[in-house]
Image 1 (cartoon, rainbow, N blue to C red):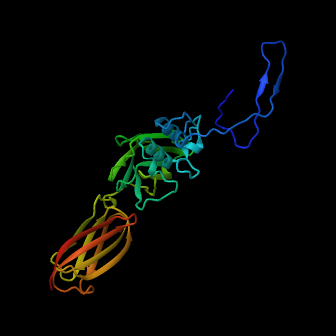
Image 2 (image 1 turned 135 degrees about the vertical axis):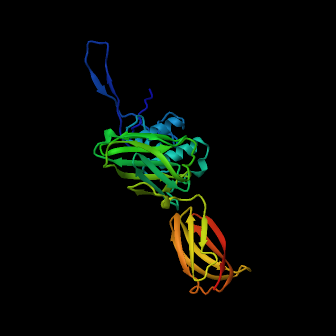
Image 3 (image 1 turned 60 degrees about the horizontal axis):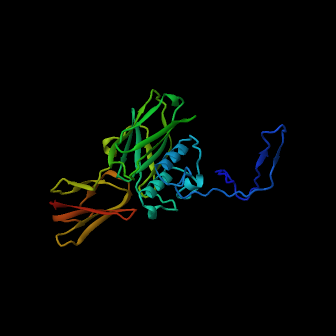
Length: 320
């Protein structure tokens, strides 16, 4: 006979027990050692049904939420083989279902651009550049049974459960799409608890990369908003002594501002280093830069850590 047991441990001895039935005797005994082979499911087959499909995602989300699904094949669910089953592995199974097997990474890579998340009254708000495909989060509270969560993003599923420390949630989708760029309300939090605090957070990109999630205890304000493209403003224009430069970055980048003449020759430059996405301001003394009167071009260059390259140029008339 063949029996399936998902908890067989390699290199362990196993026996079966038999009992005589339909007799007047009461007798039982153990067999000699029998062969036991650990069950080996395919990568992503978290529930061990020989298929990798949406049921495996449901099983993995239940495991992440602490609901102890049975059966559950840990080695199959740990798609990226990092020894932990989390939202990165959910992305891995979504990739498998969508036929994207070749982009599943066995090494943990961190996305160069973080996202910002905040609790604003009864909303969880996210600001991003459109790099987040799934989110695993925890809200800590002394009264978790009073909390109710619901997804506000069309096409995204939200699984959540009450724990002894608060509420745990997983926001994901079956098409490996990303959450909208910019400022987005992603989850409604119905509660009467002023003590809600952030617990563990983990973001995932469509490639299964870790996305750093930065938290705020208050709502995201307008000046924190991450634009979808680079923007540049210079004033006054014409300028004589001081030049104000306001710019917006859609990503974390190494930033440099340079000035050029009509022939493209560089007249001066200022290296500003690494900067986070969002709004930035700089004020330059034109005399200290050695710029004389005439028409010049102010150019901002942003080089992203992931290889992205952005430039924006504005004309500026310098006068005495």
